[in-house]
Length: 361
Image (cartoon, helix red, strand yellow):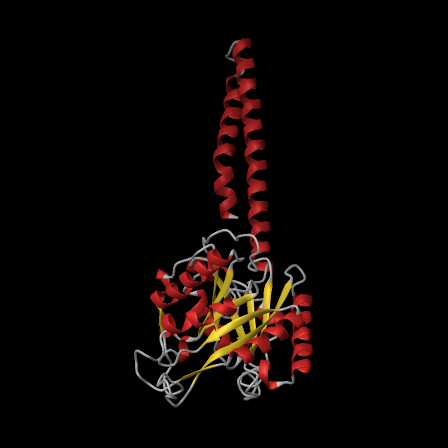
């Protein structure tokens, strides 16, 4: 109540003073002066009423606002979900406008990853072809239901160069898949109405020498590229699987520039280019990555584990270092082997920014 008394006190004293003066002096003043005093009294009364009304409105608004603030629950975000944090990091990114034929950001890619020669490298090779394509179709439908506003584009992500624990004939600790295997998966892609990704694990090779070997397949408009820093170990000299590798922005810019040249050479729609990442040093100097209209860059969160750990990794290594678009990998086996649930489309869609490339392994 002290607040109200302080607000009302000045107008009230003015009104009393004017009223007292008018009563005391009424017998000794002229009629004109009496009229002036009456006018002043009425003006003071009006000012008091206006001040009281305004103060009451202010008090009512303050009380209402305070009650609203107390009533509105504070939104709690898991790691990687906060729009405020994403904005602080620089999302959304100022990037080239999508060219005609671009997949992103108007669609979301749902991909099966792996190699048909291995049941342990991912869903693409774990299941027989027909079963695998049926499962992929089911995942695509679940994502479409979770986000009806974003059409789903199914994909097959083939590991076309597989890192090896032995040097092999070339001494490069990698194995290049035969063309017939690549063509076989490309045929499955066509059958499923999907797009294809050529994934490269360089081992001790150099992306500059091995990427051009795939021009014959990348020149198709529905074939895109992925690279895996984890298995790029030429600088360290370590065997794949014994140490986590890395790519610098300069390596990524080379691959992006190569794709740009293919797009121009063959008059293709933009290429999607995914870069796997789950450690701080997996990609160095990310601020130096060049964005090109012909290439759509996806920084792809590749780590496995409990949902909280995957969210933390997404926040620390993808959200914190904006490039262009984001991806998120889900492991049918590794994510769940300790009893943790596989994250649902709805849970992944709470991430901010929302991933536009989802990969199942």
